[in-house]
Amino acid sequence: MTDARTVPAALQREWAAVAVTTVVLTAGGAAALALGIEDAAVLLAAPLAALPPAAIQWIVPATTVAGFELWFTYRHLDANRPDETAGRESVYESLGAPNLVTLARGVLFAALAGFGAVSPTPQVAWLPALLYGAGCALDFVDGFLARRTGRTTLLGAKLDMAFDTTGFLVAPVVAVLWGQLPIWYLSLSAARYLFKLGRGLRRRRGQPVYDLPDSVVRRPLAGLQMAFITLALSPLLSFALVRPLAAAVLAPSLAVFVRDYLVVSGRLPRGAIYSSVYN
Image 1 (cartoon, one colour):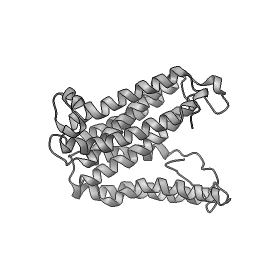
Image 2: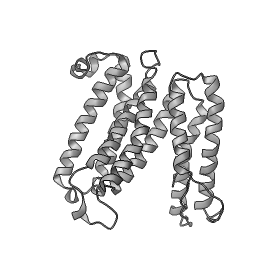
Image 3: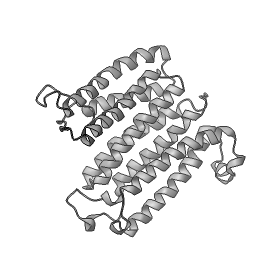
């Protein structure tokens, strides 16, 4: 939890500015695009009770996800420093370009979440794929900027992991609700939480928890999932074609999660031939 005494005032003010911008973009611009409203200012000025039902349906999940992302960011502001060994005096006074790009990804995923409560229509058919695809593309941009500018931070790593997980949860749910992915594809989202739950239970019970080795296939497999989910969200392919593709893409990732748990629980030696999607 962020201790306000360790976070520079300038950083807290920047977070507040990001929060205001996120609320405006999420509740205004993205909602206007989703509902086909040409004048976003009308939507922003309208009382909530005066909004059409579809607008409220969109806004509720979108602002819920955005609110979580903002809370998570504020909670970890004191991690806006180079590494664990850096003291409170090393906390940067600004979020920096890499973290701002990551936060932009969060806004895109929050906007995507709103479509889970909106009926698919030809006017908005492409928007979920565009939002998720853009968010995935920015995943490469924030990492590149962090390395290029020397602003890799603990906060950046936390935001990247949290927003990746958010995207992997929200996007398949929207695709399932729109009838573009089979419901069993949500097992991919559940697998990560079950893995973390199992690892946490072992720690709570005092059982050994082993580290996962590095993997050369982690990011390629994650990239494959991102590309497939983006494709599934688009109106390009029929459900009849997406269903077998989903099974083919899902199987190796689920197998890897099982293998991950066998490794952290000590049932499989670390020296075995091994690959992991997530550490």
